[in-house]
Length: 90
Figure 1: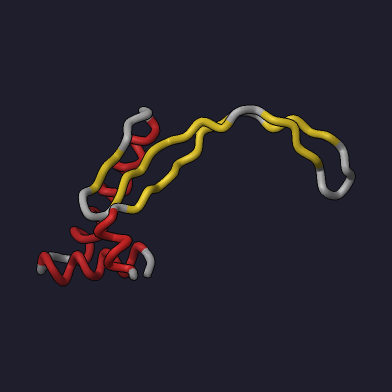
Figure 2: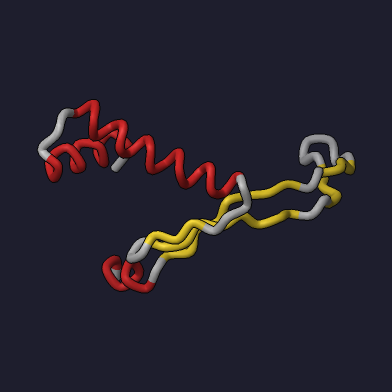
């Protein structure tokens, strides 16, 4: 299932136009992204929690040359599934 499929389901449920459904899905994704960018935790009941996690700087190796390289510190998005989602998938 991809973003277009989700927009199609939203359109069916709301009975709206395809453009309105796509805007609704896009707005939801943008809202989650903005929340994570600002460092907030985004919790959606029944689905799960989106959080950001800091990854420290570290040393790595170039697999082709074996040369040691420096990997900069970064932030990454993590998702923890809610119990309801876990139970539904079982």
